[in-house]
Length: 364
Image (cartoon, rainbow, N blue to C red):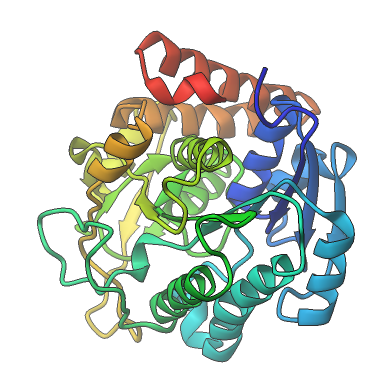
């Protein structure tokens, strides 16, 4: 049986892209899933089309409100916490930097602070971002010991969150205590059900479903593209490891694809075109773009392999095919079957990982 079976699992940001997929996966593992969010991030959304509100218990509140967060968490007394609630868009961080900074840093502090008074064993997996690294656009991957920082408000807010997590681990959550914390860094996640603004895949899927051309900012930008299930498998694996031992309490882990999955935006579009008919795009890159956006960002995931026996499952082609298949199913059927299709993709992914002999599957 999964260690999550019949356990109370709190997911902050459960209405978001990754949070909604994680809610479904943990529900399939037998967990009692509880969600905490302030709003539904987009229309449509994976949360809505999969009917997640009917599958879990949930509460809507502003994660920046310390008293509301503490009241909810202490009354719930969860066994596991996955903290994903965040303002997750770089462009939006320039429009409203204060909202981004307070949500991502103060929100993180509020979640951690709410755990201080709990006397039971709690595993908290705190999700930040690969953009927490001070990015010099190195051709080699960033390690967990590299400098944290950021040139834009979003990256800075994630760096702040990392400092908050570290301070709580050092000040309030000793290794021998009942609260065990893990930190995860991932980014450039794609997959079905993402309709956030200014993202290549949802922009493309929306445009192509209407027979229109999609406008792209920079075809030459390189990203470590990964399917949403890849980092989620890392989060679940880390939670399982922390549940069984305190060895890696307070440690940070990168969860990213193999180096061969670092492709340009143009590569991604060409690959998506293999699974969708009559695709069109237009490069609208402007050197006068008002905000900074990294051209290259890679992660080194050796620590996750060494400590957790985790490594990614999917090739770049498989990542793109799974993603486009989900949207094809949605736009062709527009029915309740999308929830079943989503569960099937989770099952197919897990079975593929097992077939390829990946050790992380033993604990989930």
